[in-house]
Length: 473
Image (cartoon, rainbow, N blue to C red):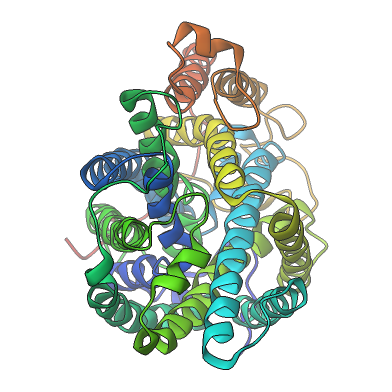
């Protein structure tokens, strides 16, 4: 299979051969990994039992999908990734806001997947072969996973799609076997000596809904376009693509996260997940668990690293996608080493998803408002001005920046950061929300309302005639 040559340039119509089923496969297969499973452990680690954990995850995921899935339609129309597409709202240079947000999201989730996957693999090999569970062995495993991930990401979309199709079947089987493996130890109660993280039930439940449920779909706010840019609007309707996105995210996130909740309760995993998960596994399930940790980690991290390469390529147009991918992998691996040896996993995960959700949400809201206002019509050529290192076009605005959109995002992100609560930091606006983290809602509302007010008297940029209607219903 040849290495993909496309970066963030416009995908020609003849290469847009994927369809809604491919989109479902990649959203399901890429998410069936420990990097997503571990989010199901967060609610029990916060002090919630089975049903509160399930309702928090399901509620947060459904709300997140309703907000995130429409973004898939943007790249369906522009034939490029979402960060570049956001140039229609932010300007061809202002779209760097989306590239940085996407880079940070992918960086964090790649590091998390390699971290958890490597820890579980070392733990399993320790039980199977007596491999010493030391910092050296973990470092070697992180490195091995990182190299495999780079190979998958460098080859690009087609290889990742094939891997996802295989993983969507293989990982479902491995997780189904895991239900029987952990069944004898399962309990619906939260781990012993685990109190509500925020002192009472509802604030803790809301935190779990955001950190474990909502964060899953929000992680895809800049990623969905990486896949839908390969789908032709002439062959597949927006309705079909939207439905496929929502369904793929729903099953792709709920299956692994609810498995994580189930195994966390069975393993009595309180402050840590990887160690108790391996210790509670029956000996016969160790090999399937090793396979799930290895294959799932490469599949998920490969897709995240692929997106990181595109975002870095967008930030530095002179860099090739391959070079950008290798650089991104090195940075992500460095984060893994720092996180593994210096940070508490629960605190690091919670802080990461809450902070990134706060700064990413207003960008997504502004992009969606712009998509609705322009009725899905874009000048694909004008979106590529920055990549060609030229100037001008309908999205040039002021020096390549739409000041209204950029200022609106900054205000929304600022409000979100002032309203967030993490193990390391609490925003001053929490006093106005009763200590409940409403950063997601407040950041989105603030950014969206300011953008709407600032652009109320302006019309969307004039673009060429609309593409022909799709032949498929």
